[in-house]
Length: 195
Image (cartoon, rainbow, N blue to C red; front, side, top):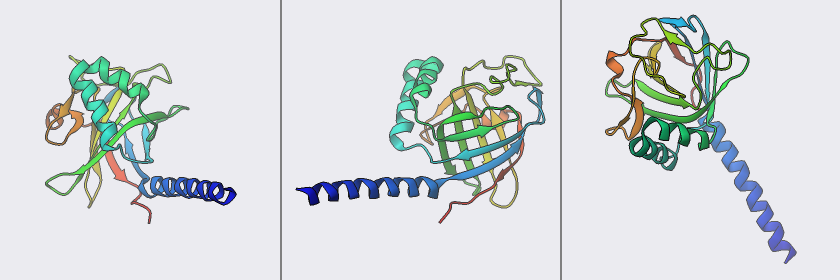
């Protein structure tokens, strides 16, 4: 009986190591600088993604957005696991609650990140775009990055554009990425997947 217990404990420890190794293998980092902001301009961002959202985690948030709108998404984000951090010039970082990546037709990466707080909230100065007409007022922040594999990319945020479900990508994204102003440039992919 003792050997069966020891075998079970050994298996659990091995499974924990495997999960840790898997999480580290998926860790990726990006850097960016804020532009076109009236409040929050010129800040250096460091984004650390520990792992990407699972299909189940993505489904929960998509369903919350579709069924209950922005308030439903905000509530679901509070219960979502921590997948990484976004570091700004503030003393505290922002927890990433949703992290999604896919490859676009032009072979660049699209990275979508959601936090459960607005950027700038730790300092009490919410980030605001230069153009403030009819900007969304979400209690969370969505960042969508487009990162080329041959050079720096750009990013846009929910500060200026509505958040919507992207049916084709089965993800949450900015409603009209192409029409939104660039708020992050240059965006650089600092780390490839570790082997």
